[in-house]
Image (tube, rainbow, N blue to C red; front, top):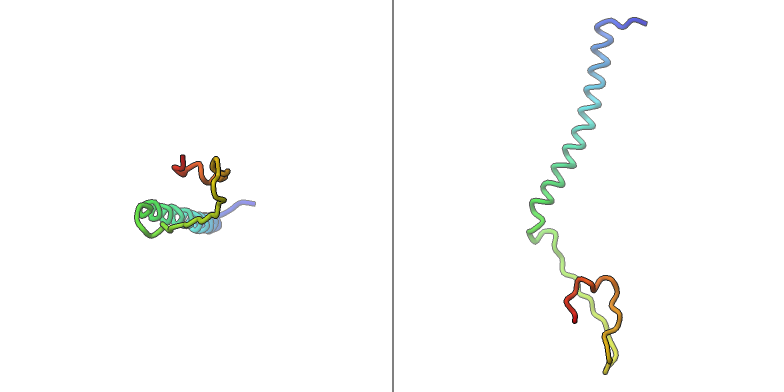
Length: 75
């Protein structure tokens, strides 16, 4: 099964085309993540979250607030 130059050339062209499609997708993902990281300090990706809880009166200590409050500055 000897391949002549034309068949080899066609196979290389097919491999080159599919490799180009694959690498274009990877470059698109890197570009998208780069744009996202560039603008992360802007107001585009920020949103305010309000958490409202009702607690009982005259508590001796704070109730358990869960893992989300480890970042809070509640003393």
